[in-house]
Image (tube, rainbow, N blue to C red; front, top):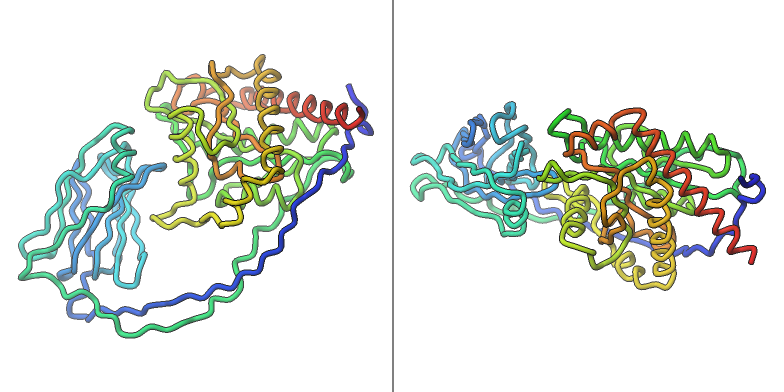
Amino acid sequence: MFSNKRWTIARRGRHNRAMGLILVLIATILSIPAAIAGDIRAVEIGDREVTLRFADVVAGASAFVLAGPDRIALDILGADPGRSPQGSGLVSAVRQGRPAADTARVVLDLARPAVVTDARFAADGRSLSLRLRPVSADEFERAAKTPRTEWQPPLNFRAKPPEKRYSVTVPIGAPKPAPALPKIEGPNNPRLPLVVIDAGHGGHDPGAISPHSGKREKDITLGIARAIRDDLVASGRVRVALTRSDDRFLVLEERYGIARRLKADLFISIHADAAENEEAHGASVYTLSEVASDREAARLAARENKANIINGVDLGAHSGEVSSILLDLTQRETMNVASDFARLLQREAADDVTFRTTAHRFASFVVLKAPDTPSILFETGFISNKDDSEFLASAAGQKKVARGVRDAIQVHFARQIAAVGR
């Protein structure tokens, strides 16, 4: 093989763009008279029915659907959140929060895709009953694209909507600081290539869940990421950093942002796919394209990109700078390098990992949009498939995935060294 000295590579130019940001928050303070405050006293979950009971009348209600993970969000105008019960039937869990000063939000985490088919207030306006109907994944995706549905209590018992009292302008200060950079492991030689491995999902976002073993994608991806790190560190030929080394949540922009701040030479995001068809199996490698290679790639990108959305709030909205920089020539060159590595990974890992027939695919994943770091998203298999799930969750399977990634990385940087020497 190659000596460590030959693994040093010339750094390519980096885009360093300074940008100042001043934000002003217009905060509207609303109040609800105590006499009509509709605290949520109970949320009753049946097999296919949900009933919300209020301490008093409320001003109205609405619902909308969120996919990836699948949820139904209920907004109750003129109410305060209450206690959440255990899930049952189609509902796996219930959470409550306050998206606005005058609104309580009840989020129903779904055990399987379902939509609201009927909803009605009681005659006295103090309860709201909803019927749920199981649907296919495609129908649920369509429902997630439709506007919210609204309902009003009977006129005689309708609460007066909260009145706007006054508005104030409040400076919110400096933006939230970027997350701390992770430790770089491997040889203490800054001239060696740096690879950043990203374990998908984490924290409150479990990712896909195996219907066979209950294994969570966030745990499997972390195990694989650690195995890849260990193999690369043992090789002594590259330096390695993990975006997360434990069970924590990062928004998508923070993940590739870590790679950019570290000036990484390669970024690999590890995931495990899921499909309604449990026969679907095999690994695939995605690289960035604003045009998806097929409908399945578009579906997967839409689901993964929604990891930023919590209770309907996007935690990582794109800036205009990111959108415009995608057209930069550096971005195009980076995408070409990523595509070369994707094909190389399939070739080098084929002895240890089963790949799908069409393994290299293209989609608009947010996590791949670093303009100057070659990036791939490695779907290591289907967690919804029994054999794939067992393979990816096992120490032996994770070592095989790691070995294939290690070999591909070694060949990738060897080629770059050869190209520089020409």
